[in-house]
Image (cartoon, rainbow, N blue to C red; front, side, top):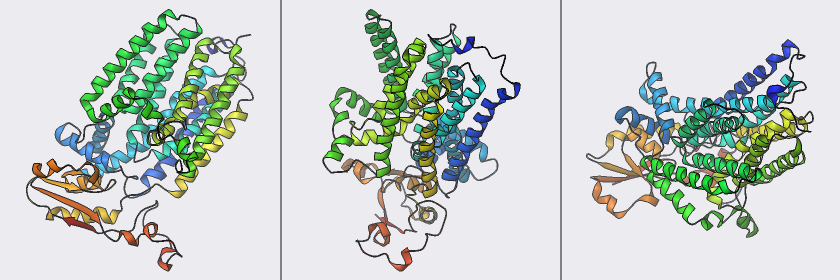
Length: 494
């Protein structure tokens, strides 16, 4: 017997007070998500991660020229520039732009709970409808905002974290487009597809892949095999148009993606699994644990859906199958390690669709949702407890600002390590590069090339030879929370 659609479920017997439960669950999860990200991102004096200085540089360039300084998909940068401009009414522009990038990174990724809330409303069983809606929102929302992956993207992968809620909004409206007639849902799906395409190339690829798989599964389930070729042709045209438009903003990354698509074997070379079998390691222990737990939970969710397949609406089953397969691919240990390290951070998003369905639809769904949420939140709390990785300190920041007055006259290029180069560009307001991208022809394009290096790096505990710790290393490092290096002295070379 097939379940009735939620729209036909009787709700008249629901006590009035319980109607507020879903809204309270939504507000609670949003508040908790903002609290966790606020502690993690706003706690240190500077944005965390090696790429923390990249976003203020882009926002400042937009305010000055109307365009990002480095070619990239621009939507988030314009939003951060607008936020910084508003904050500059109350503080200096320098502090406003840095704070603006941190506030957007704190606020917007947590909005992923809203499409979770909407999915829970559509999936909730008719018995104890509002309680099921609220419990699915709360448990799945906790897993969405409290997991390690979303916090790990803070500072470094801000565009990625910003685009993932847009992807989930898109999947909701795509799903509704096949359940309801009218133009509203297809139009909103198109809007979120465009917004995703203007934000992050990787999430755009995930969105198009999800769409293609969703359509192919639906056509295959209805045995409309003649339409599969036409659907595939349309998707190829959409993909080509997307890459063409994206190349206008970011030709380098589009070229890399086109290379991987042309030579797909590169995607499977030097995989995480092969690295582990060869004894070279597959990454930090928490990330390896993420692969294991992630695949186990996704497979368990798909197994539950498969056993209940006869009682699930066809379009809902189509959505769940697509979400599960996409999550398995993103969490696959068979992909190249460098690529997989980014994909695995996104795997939890399509998996949320499986989780919210199981918790909302079945009375025993909490037995799946509670452990999954507990594991996710435990990883997130440990991430917050240990603090964000800091590749740059406030002392270095002040030193770089002081060295700006000693820059040579004319066009100057600065060469610095990854994680330092963005802060050099921010404080010195000059062009930057690193050793890997430095070419011989570069020397003739500038009046001076300076190298920004760090001294005293051997005095860092992590760079010393093995042995007992020195007495001065046993105490805590003074300063803001987070794993930060001690003050370093830049050295300049002409």
